[in-house]
Image (cartoon, rainbow, N blue to C red; front, side, top):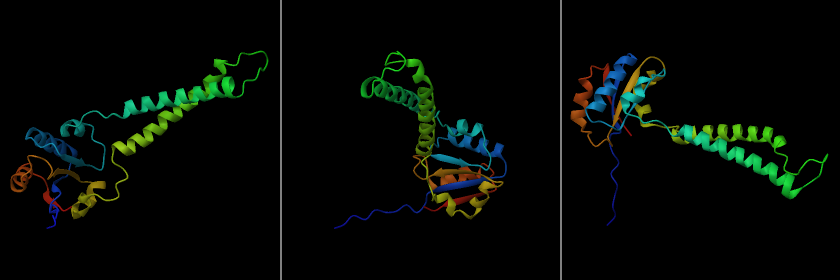
Length: 182
């Protein structure tokens, strides 16, 4: 006998708003109601939305710091290895380990390490690239990049109940509530 996994028939429910303040209020009310697996979509950056959704601070600054430290150590180590261990040359009577000449390369590799870790870390922490997402199935969502604001509560939320969540979202007075197919 084979076991067949059932595919969920719903990714979540999405409410559409016409201004950012309504979206922030809706996200705050949803978080206070106990919903945790939700996301907001907006054509403009909204600083208050992260707090309203209950997001914690990102680990990206720590990753950038570690990338910069590793880049600096790597650059300095490469200079040290090449000047002292692999190819020691006495030029002008200077010592093999003449650290002042190592500073420009160390600085540049620190910046390079930090920049690369910021680039890769941002993609990884944001789950990119993501060419497909279920919210793209909602016809009204095409206005998310122009003039509409959306709040989507996902079915994986422990508090999610299809009818109760739909009534909750309708109580927020959105322009509309849509089902998001997977």
